[in-house]
Each structure stands twice: as structure tokens, then as C-alpha cells.
Image (cartoon, rainbow, N blue to C red; front, side, top):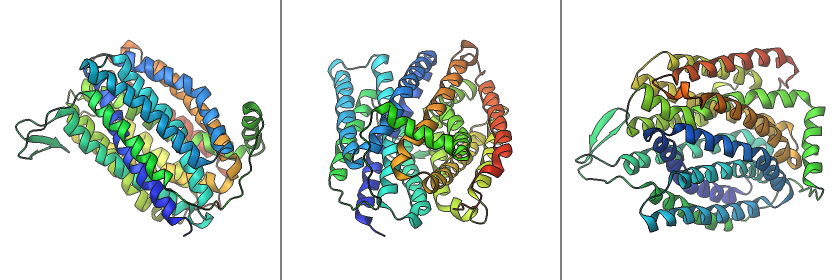
Length: 423
């Protein structure tokens, strides 16, 4: 495999920054759930999604226009300095106002928007085509292994231990040591440091581009229209991109927003249950990286995604009508398996159907529509009705119905997809 060393360094950088980001993204929703201010968190989440409507296409355009390694370096430095600034305010005053905590979440969320676009575009650029499916799986394995590490650390840092005891996966373990819960600004400090360490690994990358770089110096709107024009001329790719994103849409709403409410309001459980839920999700996603390609090797990618969409709809329905910590863990495991499996299959399909010089701006169109749907759902789920008592379960019913609608559309468009593409 060409550029092996560069890919290894990229993966290491991803692990370091991803672990710290993961802890922060678990800590923030739980913080708002426990102080009963999820409505304010929902408003912040909606606001950052509105900003993303403009940021995502611009980020995609930057990824297509500039050297991807340089984009990574600049983004890591900028995000690192902003996060250390927020953490420093907490260290100075001994606490952080909720607005700064929401700002840290929004900053990390915006970082995701450009990070993953640049990551997949760079991987596509420096990898041979025959390895696309394998590397998509490796990325998923690496990302979810990192998330599991983040979940374990989050339990210790958010909850601490009680007389040396800690709960993981519903079982208590005696570590023999006491760990004090960390204030959230210290968690942000670790997050900030990880960006600078990641920067050094990316700086050390040396690689040869395997795809000729076509630099488009036209205006942002003109460049974005290039991606839109491509999708207009290839409507099957457009519909595949939109419909295959529905699993990610619903799972991201559950992971970033509804999950904390479900654990706190419906299960009436503690942070260890919420963090363990995130870990079991990541465990499922990790396993997906190993088995999805083999599991669906004999069928085409659109059909495999249709199957996983159906299973995801069933899982949300089960969560809405049960009340069990252990059922939550099992469903989280399956959600991780389905979401990661869908992502691996989707990325492989898009790698093979979208030219590299159009990849960033074309996938940005899918992300913009996904964001619009996310804003719509968040607007509904932020209503006080869904925030009181255990009414969060009705949000899960809505997600189930949304998936069923997308499945029907997927079936209607099925024959228009490229059914020769397999993992």
C-alpha cells in the first residue's frame, strides 16, 4: 500500500484528538441534562446547525481548493487555541458559565464539519482505489476504538469513584483508588492539548498524491454550483446520498441530544449509565468496522444500507417502549453497528461514484440537507412537552416514523442506484 506511513500518522492524530473530543461531547450534554437546562442546550444546538448551513459548504469548498494537510494543520491550531481559551477562563474563575460550555460544544461540532470532510477527501487522495473499502473500515474501527476510550475516561472524569468503586456496563468494580470528579473546564483543557499533539503528527506526514489535484479558483458560489450541477446530472447519487444519511441523522440526534434526556428523565439513572451507553454504541460501531464488508460482501451496497435502515427503525421503536438499562446498552450496541455499517458502505459508494475534485462540495450538499432536517427535528424536540417527565420517548417514536418514510423512498429509488457496487 502506498503512503502507508502517512496514513498511520493520520490515524494516530485522529485517535489523540478524537479521544479528548469524545470526552467533551459526552460531558456537555450530560451537564445540561443534570441542571435541567436541556432547552437552552437545544437552542445552542439549533444555533450551531444554522451556522453549519453556511460553514459546511464553505468548509467543503476549502477542502477541494487547498492542500488537505494544510487544512488539517490550520483547523487543529485554531480549534486548539479557542478551546484552551475557554478552559483558561474556567481555571481563572474556578467555574464556567453555561454559555462557555455551550460554546465549547459548538466549536467542537463545527470542527467535525470540516474535519471529516478533509479526512475522507485526503484518504481518497492518497489511497489506491482498490483499498477504499478496507480503509473506510479501518477509519471506522479507529474512530470507534477512540470513542470507547473516551467513554471509559468520561466515567472517571465526570463521575469520579465512590470509595474506589466505579460502575461500567451496569457492574460495579473496585479499583482500590479514589478518583475525584473533574470540573468541566479541566476536561476542555485536555481537549485543547490534544489538538496541538495531533497537529505535530499531521505535520510529520509525507505522502504522494495518487489523484491529480485540480485547483478551482472560482468564487465559492461558483465552486459549490459545480457540486450541485454534478448531483443534478447524477440524480441517483443525489438520492442515495440523501436517503443513506437518514441513519446518521437519527443516531446523531439520539447521541448528541436525546440520549442524555432518555437516561436522566426516562431511566432516572446517573452519568455512568449515559457514558456506558456511549461506550456500547462505540463497541458496536467498532465491530462494524471488522464485519460489515464480510457480512454484506455478496450483496450490493444500496441493499445493505436498506437492511440497516430497517433494523435501525426497529431499534428506536424498542427504546421508545421499554425502560431498562440493559436493553438500552444492547440497543446502543446495535445502533453503533448499524450507523457505522451504513457509513462504511455509504463512503465506499461515494468514493467510487464522485470524482475527487468534486468530493468535498458534493458531499457538502448532502450535509446541508441533513442539517436542515436536524434543525427541524431539534425545533420539535426542544418543545417543553418533550423535556418534561419521560416524554422524551415520543421523540424516539418520531425518529422511527422518519426512518420508515425514508425506507419507503429508498425502495422506490432502488433500481436507479448503481447495483453493481459491492464492498
